[in-house]
Amino acid sequence: MNGPVVLYALIFLMVAFWSGNYIVGKIALREFTPLMLAGLRIGFAGVLILPVYGWERRRSLTRWTRQDVPLLLGLGVFGVTLNQLFFIVGLSRTSVAHSSIIIGLTPVLVLILASVRGLEGMTWRKAAGMAVALAGVAVLKAFEPAAGTATWLGDFFTFLTGLCFAIFTVFGKEVTMLHSSVTVNTFAYVGGAAALAPVTMWEASRHSLAHVSAAAWLSVLYMALFPSVIAYLIYYYALTHIAASRVSAFSYLQPVFATAMGVAILGERISASVIVGGLVIFCGIYLAEHG
Image (cartoon, rainbow, N blue to C red; front, side):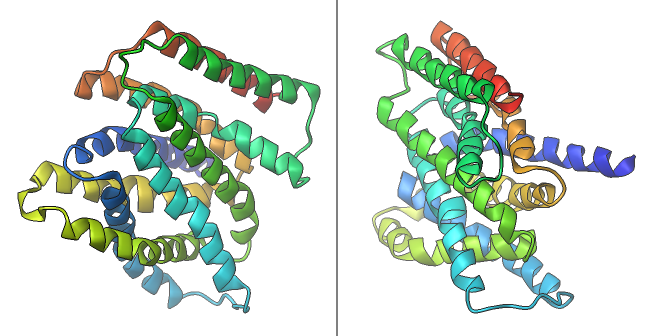
């Protein structure tokens, strides 16, 4: 009895961390460029997870093959480097509400990829749910006020965020059968930090770091530790116990939490298109998940 309770409590905590990520990301973007913020977040996360990986390696009996390192690094490109880069770039050009709702499409993307790979079956109800969810995106954008903070480009980058995470989820399910979540995330973050290091250093040379506020640095630290390291470890732990589509379905809660935080903390306004579009999208996701 305690096992499922603990598991779902951890997943709920993971969603809370991810929801807060939208808010602190907006705060950090007041003082950092998107590229620099992405590089700092991934770099800090890589440093923070290394001690955990070192502790685990002393107890691990996993056998490695020549294909393991390229596989882990490749998975990390989609799950961390591109995912978090697109997230920050998208967030800088759209609202918290739009960002969280569009990322809520991730379960549909997971289902499509899982069906293509033959891991989950496709039914007419699932296909209809996907169509409804996509129609919700059209509603979300069609009636958005022209003076709103959400842009098509920002929403597109946010969509790419969900797509990269869907690839990470579907292909990562098999990797977790061979390697622990700590190993997967360590290679993802350290590899991502190394890949973005030239860009991060170049951006830092053009930025006056001495004038960055404590709030901005604490925001970067939050993004590196809670939604990155801790939430990803919970996510992969959950993948080893329940289906990938069921884990990703908890993203239903993110738009609710994130939008409420955006209104309360950042003073964002919620338009009718956000409410109607969000409801249509999540009705579609519900149909797809239960089809």
